[in-house]
Amino acid sequence: MLDNQIKNRETHMGLFSSTEFKDLKCLFIDQLQDIYDAENRLTKALPKMAEKASDPELKSSFQQHLQETREQAERLERVFEMIDEKAETKTCEAMKGLIKEGDEVINATGDETVIDAALIAAAQRVEHYEMAAYGCLRNLAERLGIPQAAELLQQSLDEEGNADKILTELAEGSINREAAHS
Image 1 (cartoon, rainbow, N blue to C red):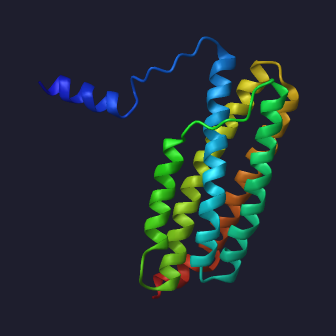
Image 2: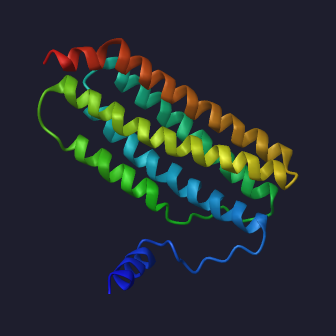
């Protein structure tokens, strides 16, 4: 009985999905579609995060990353072109969940500095997801012999790492300290 409940839950969660990966290129396309969806979702979420942020540097960081996110989506479109595939999305359930968590912070009330700290925490979870996705994709592109795609994916990976570093500096430099004294 318990085994069936676990299996049903795992099937519902997608652990035993019907996706077929015939070869590494299929996996590459699947992962490209996933992160392409993630980036498109993020272009809608970042303006809300910037609007909610009270710290000017955090607000600016979100606005800057919005522009980078748009450029990352364009880079992904170029990667799709390189492999003669149409730029399509596949619902990124992970990003949907991360954005939902971010929406909870956006809709939160309370001390502004604590909310800024919460925005940073939500944003860093997003950055870490994206870094993992771009790192995997870059490696797949290398294995598939698509060095130009690997370079574009590395650019996005570098930008995500830099965004995470900026968020860490904001958190450690002032925002979390101010939130602790609220």
